[in-house]
Image (cartoon, rainbow, N blue to C red; front, side):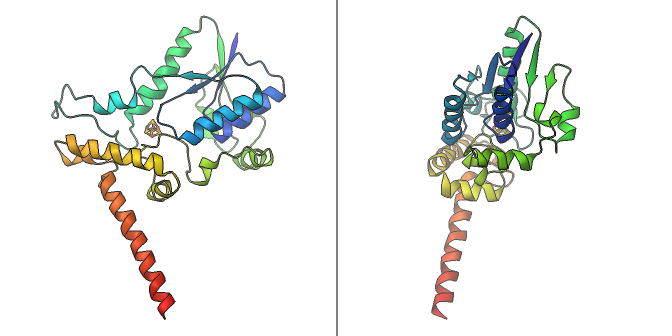
Length: 245
Ligand code: SF4
């Protein structure tokens, strides 16, 4: 029997991993499905955790990269020849190709029974109920909720700074980010924002229809950039107006 920790660098799987090690629970492998599109800060955080636990995390890489999927042209349907561009919000094809499939392939490569340990806190009963027979959620079973996870990681000096900006971790090109997150990302992560702008330009360049130019429903990346610039301008004007009165 093998014991596999599913590690995302998120708060729940991080604390679960640390506690499992402290409780001397068997761990044969720690896996991280790397989309290749995570914030650099997440990659740095994972390296930091590796240093603390003194062992390597196995990075699972997808067969096709985000770029290959983004620029692949449609072979059937009404939009033959059009590049895929950004995934649809909610039904993100990238989740399947960049995460789910590499994980499934990894599982298939294990030639024995195995248990997967997943970071699910006590306040996520629905996720817990959906677990398969060979999946376990130690945090949930120990009665540890999200609030405790956050406080405990802070106490250990292991708060992941990405949570100061984002509600959930993921690709810097994720259309499921809300406007608040995107606004903050533009300010705090200019390198990733510049890359997102580049993908936005490519989407517009190759779009045969408006939908394929969009990053989020109704918005191209360039339009979001203009919107945020305008908001900043309005704030500055308001500041000058109040300082003059
Ligand atoms: S983070 Fe967003 S873009 Fe990336 S795989 Fe998940 S849903 Fe898709």
